[in-house]
Length: 254
Image 1 (spheres, rainbow, N blue to C red):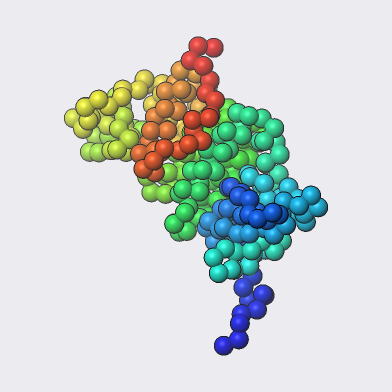
Image 2 (image 1 turned 60 degrees about the vertical axis):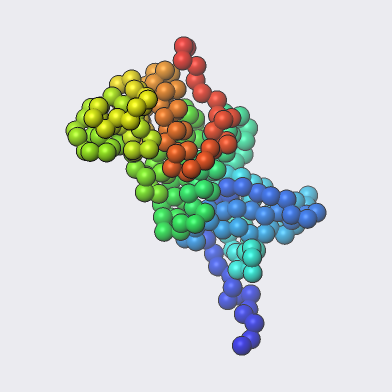
């Protein structure tokens, strides 16, 4: 059988850049989350040269219309046309940059082996990066809302109303990452944190996309919610999310 042609191995897709690595003297490995093909790792040849035809279109958090070519171990980036330049605005602001880095790390983890929900995960991440780049909400709130929604899309939807274990109607006063969110007094494991009611309301708002409620929340509720979201994410991902340690949070006292 004749070797497959370049045209037969090429495909187009929209992708957001999650991460890049240096390869050799001038090339770059780029990790994309694409709309139709899930997570793709591809080589951008000559991308690190000063006069590269890719320019800044393959930097983290950029969204591009891609032409890719299937390879043996890594695909190859044939063309990249910018769709949204979120990376430039985000990289200029450290709090936004650390939030975007955490979201990209989570997206990479969640899509490493699951392509079934790739379109939903792609749209969720691009929407969060767009909101972050234009300063639509506090960066920490965008991060926590994204984390909760991304985990829910992956099959780990938390409950912040009824008991996550037995379904007893809420409100309830304890939280368990292992059991899936808020739990009643009968189901509460020993040592479970007891978040403030305002914190629970904020968590429910972030999951539902209720931005008026989230934007009106107090710094103390935001900090407590952030800790619970991080614990929930790291429990289900089964290891720490390194970029979360760099995210700046609002002080408890204004």
